[in-house]
Length: 345
Picture 1: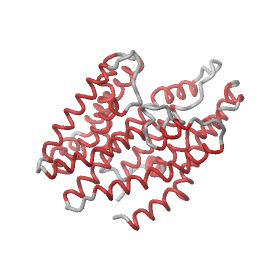
Picture 2 (picture 1 turned 180 degrees about the vertical axis):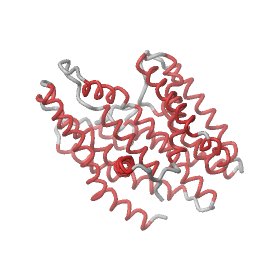
Picture 3 (picture 1 turned 135 degrees about the horizontal axis):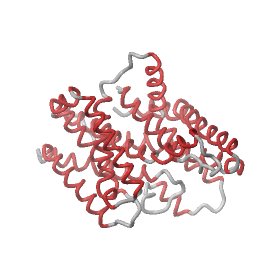
Picture 4 (picture 1 turned 180 degrees about the horizontal axis):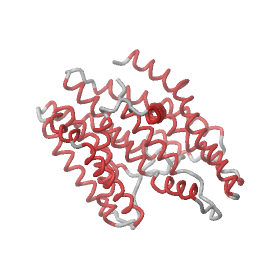
């Protein structure tokens, strides 16, 4: 069952990512709209961290619920994950590569085996898939071992230790610039999603206070996210240590609050909510296709000169990314998922 509030957050995440990859804004542009575009481009990177938190929550919730009902199969989990990620990934990002010349085999293999965080791949955005898929290869194994040892209650402590280890490794790898791509330096954001899923399923009463004082928590979440962005802009050592975790905590609050959001009383906000939620249901397709379209559309010289042409090029990029992703979701992704769900419980 889909949760509309979470689909809305997915929509926000993919819109942030699209904004991150807008073309470079010409110096001649200095007005309100260019300021808004610069802000969108500046903060767009946080969309991936929002995806990580959502992914950690949703995938681990599936695992925890199946374990609770005594019907979890690790082989079925891997099969379903493979069929969710791989077919569309191959169709959108790998098959077109074979029509190009002089593509390094090493880069193709990096993409095929989700090693983009450690070995240079073909695309600049697939490193996040590398982080997720490497994590989801190991995580079910850890959970099953804990279940067999009757020690699942120890999982929160393991997650905390893993988060601390990631922070220590990031601190030891400090170069003066944020590290984005390597799994062992980025999984703490996913771990926060897992942490929230565990407590939401097994200790749901802990979150009553969150819903009781939701306005205060919203303000607190926004402040955490804003502080993380400021640290990122300054490229400080503090960001390298805890910046991603500040984002994860802020996003976790919004995630929990979004579970109970189905609609808005205001008709305008409700229409916007529904539209962004629909984009969120297609977020994987949009994510895959937006960089190829970005390279295709923004590679034309007219996008880099006059302000008028800049707006045209980026408007085409944004619209094509969203519509392209929606069409791919409808005609390719959904049929594949229906076949998957027909044969795998």
